[in-house]
Image (tube, rainbow over all chains, first blue to last red; front, side, top):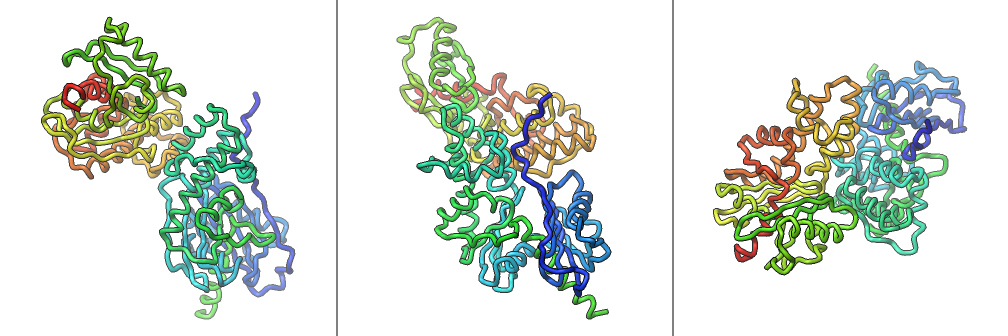
Length: 294
Length: 249
């Protein structure tokens, strides 16, 4: 029997940043971000990114945390015991078996964005698998305000997976394909993925090419998240994190709606690990503090 | 002219001569034409015998032959009070929208609330959940009445609820218990929507979802009132539209 291709399935991977030898380091910490859809483990050596893994979250949060951590460690010669302090974050943050502390992903995303892009970042749009947040922060990466939609799939990665599957377009290609239109079509429903999906079916029946349908869908999603950004009274510099930051069709349209460009992703980094990086940095702060107390 | 089905009724001096239902499909105009011709035949009347045709529903602009139109809320008020003169609130849950209408003793709409933005408050939600549970849509209602445990769903969004149902099945929760949780979830949403309007008795439940006994049972519980459910709840709007010319609408 031929298996149906899973167009929603995005690539899982791990990576070591070839920078320095961890063995000579003062302190190794880790941040583990167990999201509703993806789990990320990030290893920080003396406060610098050293290695990370990104994989799909399974049915059990503790298992997913363990798997992501082991995968990040793979090939580094490092063992879990070498990591002095671990902070868990994300939807499953209290279910990271080896974590010393749990910190919310909003706090961690702001701190991570501050690390990736520097102190000029003031607004972060985090488009995750099952929620979407607009976060304001100061020059130290401290959260000053945030708004979030976690009730509804509109504007989230799950919403994007639904349309990728419906149109049989691999999810990594959705963004680029959606930009291949000469004229931007009317967006589909921006309030509900279910209604947007049935509108998309109608448009396909009418004979719309896939790229037009994707454009109508991406544009609806961009309108939806732009609302959050407006309500949080965004300021520049503006950045986008989370899996959807890799979707050029959404990024371009969000930028068009709000009239502001997002800072581009740094070479060799992944927008999905911002929360994990933030957690790893908090782990270092907490380790230092506990060491001083002791 | 509903998003899922087109319902039509021919009335003569306040008596129903014929009524019928056809899926809206992708050619709503053609479907509307077809059901109209079928009803003419059923009622044994000719097109010229019809004095006035009123369209209502999400696709009311597409009805090719309508002389006038009435809002869905207005039609619910007229249809609901026609069937149950004591009705002061008509709740109508269709495939893609839910609404609650306050009406007076003359069948006039006084106030209303509506949700047409989110599938979780409409019949689409139950359809998606039935698919996730792998039970037929007609069976999910009766199945939920066999529930032994009361569990509640965390997810509000239809998309998230689909995954939740799958996890509940994996955790070996009985399908009946899940089915009840599904109906409780949508009933809670319809209840909080109706509360914004204020619940005035008697309350009529209309729309295709009212045929689902599981939903009716959950909604009676969450609203804490007995519901008057017509035999053919999906026709309330069409009846109301047909009554509109007589009522001077």
